[in-house]
Length: 136
Length: 125
Image (cartoon, rainbow over all chains, first blue to last red; front, side, top):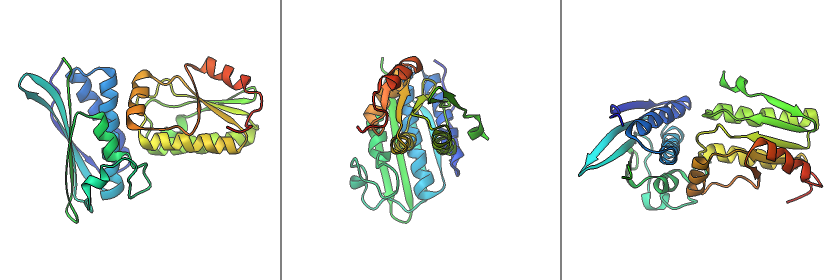
């Protein structure tokens, strides 16, 4: 395991979704996640960066390694200054979507990760934080 | 661009397409167009999508594949997805993805077997 450097990537175009997937894949692999967890984390990152691109047009993804009480994990934060989510609880329901997506963005990412927190304010923007912990 | 790297191979009356490992949205959309165009041009009876190198299947990719499967069905063909990796299968299931009723096979060889074994190609289901 090598400690991945924390990083930040702007999400401004559709091509940045692929860049985000690559950055997250490298960070997760470096931390020692297995292939299935790497795939889960990268897929969640793909859904959440696409949310930014689709709803807010631009934003950013940040990542960093976590060391909490002997546990090791990866944290991803997705931030935008887009329209915000009026009803976060409803957006977390499977099947709910206000755009042409599959309505799996938020709830799908939550199922693939261990923790998810969403802060959103209409007219201000949305921040989604997800974490995955390394199994011992 | 990346989209040009997709090749559609005709083998007898079937089409074989190898999906790149980590395609962007444009490449996924281009793949759909190329497949449908080739289906019409070659009067193909079926499509094998080799996804053995695909590292990630998110909801956009899955939706485009599901659409392609349905479009190919409307043109009288069947689609087999070949070689989905275990890690991708686990993730797709947790994410709740469905693939539009595509047939699945462990590898391309078995995918061809499945399509040759379909007695009435394009006949429902």
